[in-house]
Length: 173
Image (cartoon, rainbow, N blue to C red; front, top):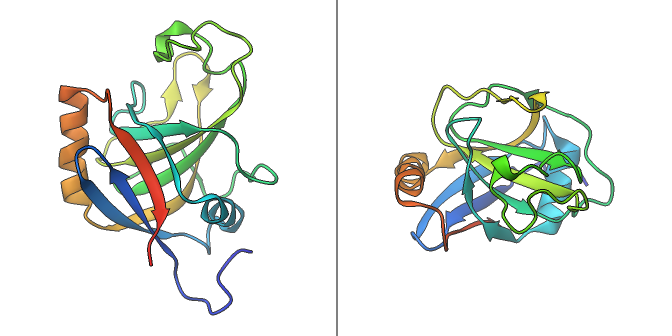
């Protein structure tokens, strides 16, 4: 299923649960139909939140793979803009060094493949990782409401820490 049968746009809510901050994003069904369909069918999704080290103004969560088949690189970017929701897939070895900060799995070559669901909240992002080079992401959604409050919460997360915080994605009625 790509676009809803009636052609109406679909919306989701993105939240930092502990901070009680939410924003609304529109799915980009016309630009990333396979990815949008996979995410929509898997919702709700949530996990520990991380603040990006390399990309700059990004928060994300890592979840197990959920798509029946991995989405192709549709609507790709290496320069996300504020409000972009991006989808990345990282295989068993791509996040295996301790520099990524995933203590429980750091250094283990048997780390499972994970899906990274990210929210970019400010400008000047560049998806360039010193370990692997360019890391294009699939832009599958765009925040249409509440980005300013979310950006403030993301800055607080950067300064105060992410421990105990959850990033969630859910369907909006």
